[in-house]
Amino acid sequence: MIPPKPPARPDRASLWRYMRLFRRDILSAQPAKLYRAWMAEFRTPFFRSYLVNQPELVKTVLKDRPADFPKSDRIGEGLRPLLGNSVFLTNGATWERQRRIIDPAFEGGRLRDTFPAMLAAAEACVARLATKTGHPLEIEAETSHVAADVIFRTLFSVPIEHETAAQVFARFRDYQRSSPILNLAAFVPLPRWFPRLHRRATLRAARDIRRLITDLTAARQDQIAAGTAPDDLATKIMTTRDPETGACFDTQEMVDQVAIFFLAGHETSASALAWALYLVATHPDWQETLAQEARALDTPDFAALGQLRRARDTFREALRLYPPVPMMVRETTCPEGFRDRTLPKGAQVVLSPWHLHRHTRLWDNPDGFDPTRWQTENGRTCLRDAFFPFSAGARVCPGAGFAMVEGPLLLSMILRHFRITATGAPPVPIAHLTVRARDGIHLVLTPRDQASP
Ligand code: HEM
Image (cartoon, rainbow, N blue to C red):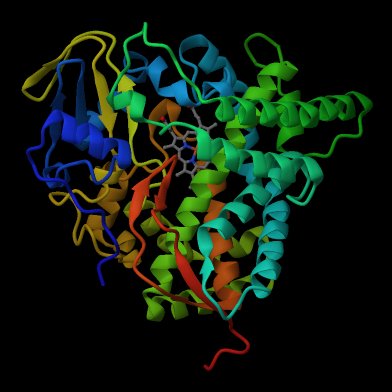
């Protein structure tokens, strides 16, 4: 069974039709030829953007010369009220300084330290799901809940039930419902003079979230000063000095970073886990294989993770078919010769994990679900050249290692306890803030100890 793929639009479409489709969903607004093209140009009376879909060119933009292709200011427009001056939006020297302080918190050794908090969130998730078995369940709501719980427990050592955490989570949902489509501005850059209209509800939700995060951060600052702070990611980041300037983040700048950790760290993981669960629900034989493997968690410690190889391959396959961040945008700072075209200065360069991950000239069985591909030569080559769900190069997601521990762990914990089947119509992938299912993903969970063998 081929996993759901959004319908493509006809190759030729008028600008206005494209815009209309685009407003609804950027994935189904694209023509099918992008799955086999190396590069494509979108030319409109107002702007030009270029989809770069060839591994060598993606490498040039992300790895070889990232400073020449910064993030455009316009991308952050929908997010700035919430994220302020966070590492996700900055460029140049400010971005470099922020990464010098953040990156050590996510290094390999620290992942081992965050494992108990992740496991506690996974156990709480299993307990919650145990009360919801036997009838259809919208799984994205559940995966958002557990991913938010993971972030709060690892960052601030508090579970999602903590009053402030619960409020941030709730207000965040309001923010998402009311905020404009994230990447729209990238494809349709508004002229600089155009008034930036954020809806009042969006601004109010962003203000509330920031106030709540400021309370958490200020309280942590006091605990650090008193020597009573827990040893978690927030303490690590707030006590790390920039090796070049010796300065730490002040409270304001830390609030900006916490906002992006929360946003980037829970929406994305929640999306990938929901799709992974759908994929195993529709591939029952493979699901049984994973459930067997999950026995490694009889003694759940960091070392057991090494044995979850198939869960890891499965999570990776979910990231390939449904990359939570389907497209990224950069801007040229000088004219660039890409293939047979010259990109003018200020052109939008679109990088699309969504298309490269299903490129018909690169992947064997590009639209099929095959977690064993990663052990084949084609899979290994594509893993290196055509797979970038976490981006790549200097601006690679700092949470990539974290997410690759969290995802397989949660997947295994859930499959260890429940047998899963899909119900209702197949989900239709569309791009919101991340790749989601248009009408949710509906699954039925049955406790394994009650299920027939
Ligand atoms: C499956 C899970 C995840 C996926 C697929 C993912 C994907 C990405 C991608 C594609 C980017 C680059 C975006 C761009 O360049 O426009 C990014 C950046 C970022 N991610 Fe993640 N991410 C995940 C989990 C996390 C987690 C768990 C955290 C933190 C706890 C995190 C924190 C960040 C931050 C801070 C950035 C900005 C980095 C920068 O611009 O220098 N992410 N992520």
